[in-house]
Image 1 (cartoon, rainbow, N blue to C red):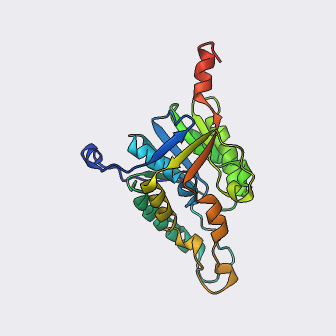
Image 2 (cartoon, rainbow, N blue to C red; image 1 turned 90 degrees about the horizontal axis):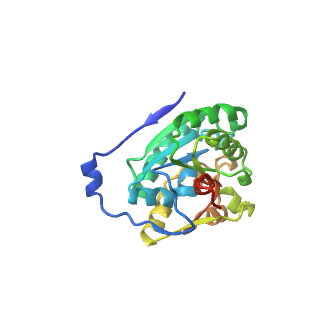
Image 3 (tube, rainbow, N blue to C red; image 1 turned 135 degrees about the vertical axis):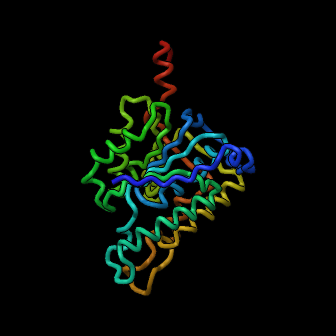
Length: 255
């Protein structure tokens, strides 16, 4: 089942929106008129591409978040919080985070795949994504170097979804920054002071992942301070995996 939440504002409201501030690119910015950020779990979209989404809003691009799972398995052994409560709580945290980021109108499509089981559903996830994508999108994907099984599976699904349809696909590391397994980036977005402050504030909305939910070890934080420090930085990094510019040059007979 796919669920869509939409909170689009009118063109008048968008025209009156104050400047968000965003950042400066090293390497080419995305070509697509729509940025599609695929998040294995709630919080991955902000950690991987919070600054990019803010940049996109600042530059008149449409943003779509595809939430593959609802993150209900983050505390599987907890006796204090159920999977259904985690699903509800993490959706609330995501809404709060997007508001803090300055993009509360962003659409979210929930694929509602089983958390920590995405490897079983790679073809299905790929089909859902392919149906959502437009030829001129820029797709932001996790990377297989994140090592987390859901991130690996979703990265594989984005490859399936973007093959042969003109979509520009970028990988954005999160856990790979912790493990120091990330590939060398070919694009960087250095966040300006407002964007960096907004991203830190947005990430802090995910309290269920950053704070203990109770005194038991099973209720401890999922992301520890040193891990967060590796992932949450004033520069976002990306590696192009499907480069529309290269295809355009090749179609023109140049290199």
